[in-house]
Length: 149
Image 1 (cartoon, rainbow, N blue to C red):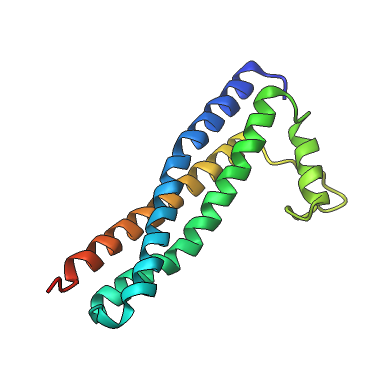
Image 2: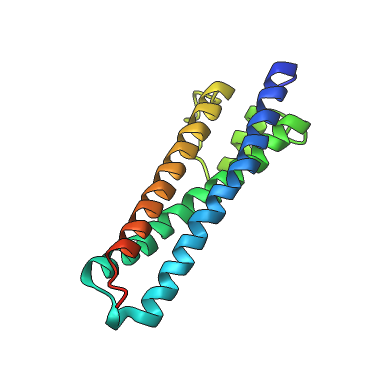
């Protein structure tokens, strides 16, 4: 991957992934606050509030997975942009060696194109944003349904 356009695409995506890490921080904060509220006030919460805070915590596990994957992808795209990752083939081989990617069949040495990788990461970012939006909505619902008296 020696094309300047490919390196620029990788650098831009790595920058976007660094910026979207703030969304992961928001999701993690919602998870922690919800777990703390449940731990401290479970007996006095309404059923709807308990389910809302519980759902935020459960979605937090999925959010953390997405955040981890995005953080990993950010490092890979940054490596591609800086040429510390030699090529897409070398990346696929390293991922296969680590058990993070299925090894290609022996007769076909297929390497995923960069466009497919970028598209996959963008879809992962969208899914992460959807999970955090759901967490935010459920957190707000739980707050609104809690009896403050």
